[in-house]
Length: 315
Image (cartoon, rainbow, N blue to C red; front, side):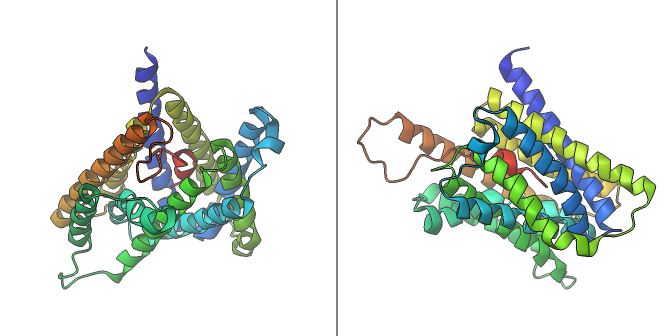
């Protein structure tokens, strides 16, 4: 196979595994505290991050040498909290409803990039963000008499993940992706371990097996995603995350008996379309900025849409 074919297979396999991981998280989150589940996942993830760092040039010492460690620590801790909220959302709101809201993440990132990164968002992307907001309204359906206030939970998780993504882009200006990945795993594990043991719960042997599968899917999914980024441009890999949203919704409907209403389906289709356009537009502007001769200002920094995506895929 060609490198591109191999990369596409790795990317599709990664998002498929992450979809299964979300289903397992919902199953476990219905019986055990989300903080406890997240702690077990992070212990495995931290071990994986250490293993990768030890094999990189310079080893763990170089990977841990961050120019702005406070930023790396803050984003690592933020993601750990966000994952706890996501697992809680899976078990109490539902996989389908949660992921329809998570699909708005690229739109949130585009909005936050203006005040936090000083980027300039043109009228095309603002239009896409506005259309995406219409899709979110369809998902939430605030005029429906049966409006469920629990939808606020995945909304908070989406906002937190958007902020984490912006912090990752900010950190990528001074630190390597190896450093960002290392801090994500290690800081997240330390953060969750501070409170996680207080939520330690007796786990059945069968569920310990599910915990093991959860850790294995996380590590294997990360490895495949890293392979995909090594073989493909980020703009090709990043929209693949929307395949995960579709697969997770199918798992929610056919495995857990969740219901997706017509307005949710239409809303998520609109949000996905707006998100893909936003990703494509960012990539195009990033390439244009990179093609300019040195010294020519373009009004915004060249941002790789995939910056930090590898360590973001922890859902």
